[in-house]
Each structure stands twice: as C-alpha cells, then as structure tokens.
Length: 67
Image (cartoon, rainbow, N blue to C red):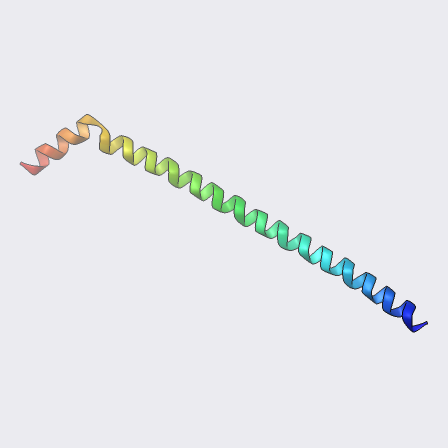
C-alpha cells in the first residue's frame, strides 16, 4: 500500500514539474520575443541615424555650422 502511495505522489510531482517547466519556457519565449522586437527597433534607429549622418546636406550643414 505504501509503495502505491509513493508512486502516485511521484506521478503528481512529475506532472507539476513538467507544468512548471512549460510555464517557465513560455515566459522565457515571451521575454526573448520582447528583446528581439527591441533589437529590431534599435537597428532601425541606427539605420536612420546612419542615413542622416551620411547625407550630403547634413555634411554641408555641419560645415556651415563650423564656420
């Protein structure tokens, strides 16, 4: 009787651990997606800044401002 009880408790513990691990993986995936969106936004901002800085009119304005 005691062995059956231990097996049942072990089975429920295994189910709880699997469920916990799935929830943790889901949370990590959400965090990864959030960070990926942030990286994509930052890449776009860098591309915009590079466009502005390499623009010839920006270079001309910078030279005028230095005078």
